[in-house]
Length: 503
Image (cartoon, rainbow, N blue to C red; front, side):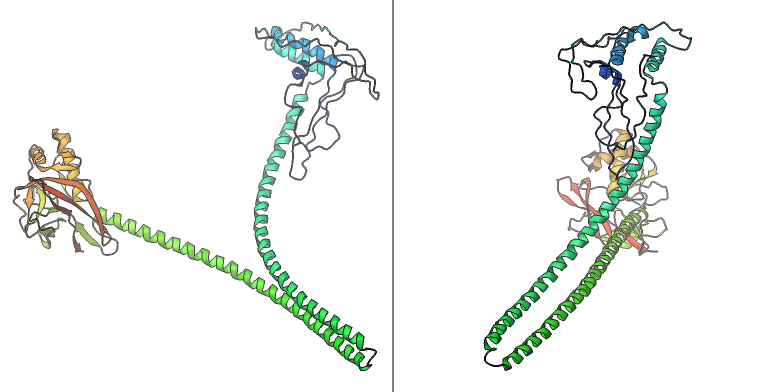
């Protein structure tokens, strides 16, 4: 230890500071290195001044770090700077040396309580400190020994624990500040709402003040009138003593009028207050009613949309809706007779739901697109027409399609994968090429109509079918429409027809 007065530089000071003031001294930096790099003032025979310590006293929710100044003996700092130059050597490292302390002369500081300043610059004293070799244990490095010597020299042994405790207190205070700031934010929001209400009340008060101003104007007019009458009465006092009685009567009347006016103003103010209260209550109720109506409208719209969505998905998936419990089956029907419409008839033709009964057929010359028997039941039914129940001849599985056009697309894709034949181009399925691919799966493609459910008819003039369909909403369902192309290039309507029956 150095000779001289010793003071704990981290002793808390008996003062109250707002610890959120800007910290210009940077209390978390290394004060020894930072000071050692600057020119040092002359020691001037003063004892070591203690470094001010922060106090952590919250004040009115507005905490800022307190300014802190440190004061360490210049001579001690000079010694520390010299020791810092030998730090790399003591640690056994080849790191870059710290910058040496410049030898620029500095002026001496005045003695305490005087204005005396030394006139000539004096070079900072250079002190050579010999650090005795200390034994190093098996678990203690030279750096640790050096650290212990340094801490013992400046009297900082054990201070880190105090600093850690103070840091913990600071963290607790900051956490409390966050909670307080959150509460302040909530109060600020409430105050803003109250300010809005106050603004509305101030508007009404302004209106009342205008009415009062009108009453005051009327009163002023009466006062002016009274003044005129007073002048006339004063002029006639010498004439007739009876005029005094008249004046008195007029004054009494005026006093009565003033009383009545005052009573009227008071009554108006009371009525205005009642009206304002009623209007405020009505406004609140109107807002509540509007909010309830808006919520109800939103809920009704949401319920309706959800029901329609579920109903549509249910219908497309299972063939019946949630209201009518209907069964829908959908083969592709072509306008072969070219009359511009699709002609079908229920309760005849193809069994579309495998219940042993016929549900629908294409009539009047129009035809259904179909394949040869896939399920070996000896007839053409829902497994062979193009719809939601079609059996894919290449996979022998039911298609994953929600209409006949999607079933046609899936079978065309399977044909290419199974045979390598390019059946579809941009969604237009060439039926001749599809017929070629189906032949490799022992299946034929053709047309059926009316009650014919056993023999496929030829494709005739039909060359291709465009599977790129358009949807038309009809009675809560989307019906798909496209076209087929003849060998001469003409296009005629192809429709995914829904045959419906009640269960």
